[in-house]
Length: 175
Image: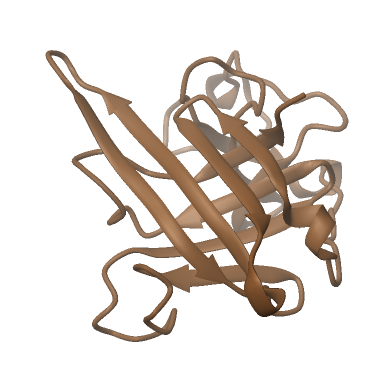
Protein backbone atom coordinates (compact mmCIF):
# COMPACT_ATOMS: atom_id res chain seq x y z
CA UNK A 1 0.00 0.00 0.00
CA UNK A 2 1.29 3.47 -0.89
CA UNK A 3 0.84 5.32 2.43
CA UNK A 4 1.15 8.76 0.81
CA UNK A 5 -2.11 8.27 -1.10
CA UNK A 6 -3.98 5.96 1.23
CA UNK A 7 -6.55 5.41 2.50
CA UNK A 8 -8.54 5.91 -0.68
CA UNK A 9 -10.78 3.90 -2.99
CA UNK A 10 -8.02 3.18 -5.48
CA UNK A 11 -6.27 0.06 -6.70
CA UNK A 12 -3.00 1.24 -5.12
CA UNK A 13 -4.63 1.14 -1.67
CA UNK A 14 -6.21 -2.31 -1.96
CA UNK A 15 -4.67 -5.23 -0.13
CA UNK A 16 -5.33 -8.94 -0.47
CA UNK A 17 -6.53 -9.28 3.14
CA UNK A 18 -10.25 -8.96 3.77
CA UNK A 19 -12.89 -9.34 6.45
CA UNK A 20 -16.21 -11.11 6.08
CA UNK A 21 -19.48 -10.13 7.78
CA UNK A 22 -19.39 -11.22 11.41
CA UNK A 23 -15.62 -10.88 11.89
CA UNK A 24 -14.68 -8.88 14.98
CA UNK A 25 -11.91 -6.30 14.57
CA UNK A 26 -10.39 -3.66 16.80
CA UNK A 27 -10.91 -0.14 15.48
CA UNK A 28 -8.54 2.76 15.71
CA UNK A 29 -8.53 6.27 14.35
CA UNK A 30 -10.69 7.48 11.49
CA UNK A 31 -9.26 9.36 8.52
CA UNK A 32 -11.90 10.88 6.29
CA UNK A 33 -14.40 8.16 5.46
CA UNK A 34 -12.01 5.34 6.48
CA UNK A 35 -11.21 3.69 9.81
CA UNK A 36 -8.01 1.91 10.76
CA UNK A 37 -8.72 -1.66 11.91
CA UNK A 38 -6.72 -4.55 13.34
CA UNK A 39 -7.96 -8.10 12.90
CA UNK A 40 -6.85 -11.46 14.20
CA UNK A 41 -8.71 -14.70 13.68
CA UNK A 42 -9.66 -16.30 16.99
CA UNK A 43 -9.39 -19.71 15.31
CA UNK A 44 -5.91 -19.17 13.83
CA UNK A 45 -3.06 -21.47 14.82
CA UNK A 46 -0.60 -18.59 14.40
CA UNK A 47 -0.52 -15.14 16.01
CA UNK A 48 -0.95 -12.82 13.06
CA UNK A 49 -2.60 -9.42 13.13
CA UNK A 50 -3.73 -7.80 9.92
CA UNK A 51 -3.93 -4.00 9.95
CA UNK A 52 -5.47 -1.74 7.35
CA UNK A 53 -8.13 0.79 6.41
CA UNK A 54 -11.78 0.01 5.78
CA UNK A 55 -14.64 2.27 4.74
CA UNK A 56 -16.19 3.43 8.02
CA UNK A 57 -19.67 2.88 6.61
CA UNK A 58 -18.95 -0.86 6.27
CA UNK A 59 -18.29 -1.29 10.00
CA UNK A 60 -20.88 -2.06 12.67
CA UNK A 61 -20.30 -1.53 16.38
CA UNK A 62 -20.30 -4.61 18.57
CA UNK A 63 -21.15 -3.68 22.13
CA UNK A 64 -19.31 -5.47 24.95
CA UNK A 65 -21.52 -7.38 27.37
CA UNK A 66 -22.89 -4.73 29.77
CA UNK A 67 -22.44 -6.70 32.99
CA UNK A 68 -21.15 -10.21 32.35
CA UNK A 69 -22.01 -12.77 35.01
CA UNK A 70 -19.25 -14.88 36.57
CA UNK A 71 -20.20 -17.78 34.32
CA UNK A 72 -19.64 -15.56 31.26
CA UNK A 73 -15.98 -15.14 32.26
CA UNK A 74 -15.19 -18.67 33.43
CA UNK A 75 -13.78 -21.35 31.21
CA UNK A 76 -10.73 -22.37 29.29
CA UNK A 77 -9.92 -19.71 26.71
CA UNK A 78 -7.49 -20.43 23.88
CA UNK A 79 -5.54 -18.31 21.45
CA UNK A 80 -2.67 -19.07 19.05
CA UNK A 81 -0.24 -17.40 21.48
CA UNK A 82 -1.39 -19.14 24.65
CA UNK A 83 -4.32 -19.87 26.92
CA UNK A 84 -6.16 -18.36 29.87
CA UNK A 85 -8.14 -20.40 32.40
CA UNK A 86 -10.68 -18.49 34.49
CA UNK A 87 -12.38 -20.16 37.45
CA UNK A 88 -14.59 -18.90 40.27
CA UNK A 89 -12.59 -17.60 43.23
CA UNK A 90 -13.39 -16.43 46.75
CA UNK A 91 -15.79 -13.59 47.60
CA UNK A 92 -16.90 -12.86 44.04
CA UNK A 93 -13.41 -12.88 42.57
CA UNK A 94 -12.17 -14.88 39.61
CA UNK A 95 -8.94 -16.86 39.56
CA UNK A 96 -7.01 -16.30 36.34
CA UNK A 97 -4.19 -18.57 35.22
CA UNK A 98 -2.66 -18.00 31.83
CA UNK A 99 0.39 -18.78 29.80
CA UNK A 100 1.49 -16.85 26.76
CA UNK A 101 4.39 -17.66 24.50
CA UNK A 102 6.33 -16.37 21.55
CA UNK A 103 8.35 -18.83 19.48
CA UNK A 104 11.63 -17.13 18.60
CA UNK A 105 14.24 -18.49 16.21
CA UNK A 106 16.05 -20.68 18.74
CA UNK A 107 13.90 -20.63 21.88
CA UNK A 108 10.46 -19.86 23.27
CA UNK A 109 9.74 -16.78 25.38
CA UNK A 110 6.93 -17.16 27.92
CA UNK A 111 4.75 -15.12 30.22
CA UNK A 112 2.44 -16.20 33.02
CA UNK A 113 -0.71 -14.76 34.58
CA UNK A 114 -1.60 -15.95 38.09
CA UNK A 115 -4.13 -13.55 39.54
CA UNK A 116 -7.31 -13.24 41.58
CA UNK A 117 -9.40 -10.28 40.42
CA UNK A 118 -13.00 -9.06 40.49
CA UNK A 119 -14.80 -7.85 37.37
CA UNK A 120 -15.91 -4.22 37.45
CA UNK A 121 -18.96 -3.74 35.26
CA UNK A 122 -18.10 -4.89 31.76
CA UNK A 123 -14.33 -5.25 32.26
CA UNK A 124 -11.97 -7.46 34.17
CA UNK A 125 -8.71 -5.60 34.68
CA UNK A 126 -5.72 -6.18 36.90
CA UNK A 127 -2.05 -5.41 37.26
CA UNK A 128 0.83 -7.69 38.21
CA UNK A 129 -0.40 -10.33 40.70
CA UNK A 130 -3.69 -8.51 41.36
CA UNK A 131 -2.36 -6.77 44.46
CA UNK A 132 -1.60 -3.59 42.51
CA UNK A 133 -4.23 -1.22 41.10
CA UNK A 134 -4.53 -1.32 37.31
CA UNK A 135 -3.71 2.38 37.00
CA UNK A 136 -0.82 2.35 39.51
CA UNK A 137 2.21 3.83 37.72
CA UNK A 138 4.46 1.26 39.45
CA UNK A 139 2.55 -1.67 37.93
CA UNK A 140 4.51 -3.64 35.38
CA UNK A 141 2.04 -6.04 33.75
CA UNK A 142 -1.42 -4.58 33.03
CA UNK A 143 -4.23 -6.68 31.56
CA UNK A 144 -7.78 -5.70 30.58
CA UNK A 145 -10.39 -8.24 29.46
CA UNK A 146 -13.86 -7.81 27.97
CA UNK A 147 -16.51 -10.22 26.76
CA UNK A 148 -17.54 -9.30 23.23
CA UNK A 149 -19.86 -11.67 21.38
CA UNK A 150 -18.51 -15.20 21.96
CA UNK A 151 -14.97 -13.93 22.50
CA UNK A 152 -12.80 -12.98 25.44
CA UNK A 153 -10.95 -9.91 24.16
CA UNK A 154 -7.68 -9.36 26.00
CA UNK A 155 -5.35 -6.39 25.87
CA UNK A 156 -2.09 -6.04 27.75
CA UNK A 157 0.74 -3.52 27.86
CA UNK A 158 3.38 -5.91 26.40
CA UNK A 159 5.09 -6.23 29.80
CA UNK A 160 3.65 -9.55 31.02
CA UNK A 161 6.42 -11.90 30.02
CA UNK A 162 9.52 -12.40 27.97
CA UNK A 163 10.51 -10.60 24.80
CA UNK A 164 7.62 -10.35 22.30
CA UNK A 165 5.18 -12.15 24.64
CA UNK A 166 1.72 -10.64 24.73
CA UNK A 167 -1.66 -11.87 25.90
CA UNK A 168 -3.40 -9.39 23.58
CA UNK A 169 -5.83 -11.14 21.29
CA UNK A 170 -9.21 -12.67 20.66
CA UNK A 171 -9.68 -15.83 22.75
CA UNK A 172 -12.34 -18.45 22.14
CA UNK A 173 -13.71 -20.93 24.64
CA UNK A 174 -12.16 -24.34 24.36
CA UNK A 175 -14.83 -26.92 23.55
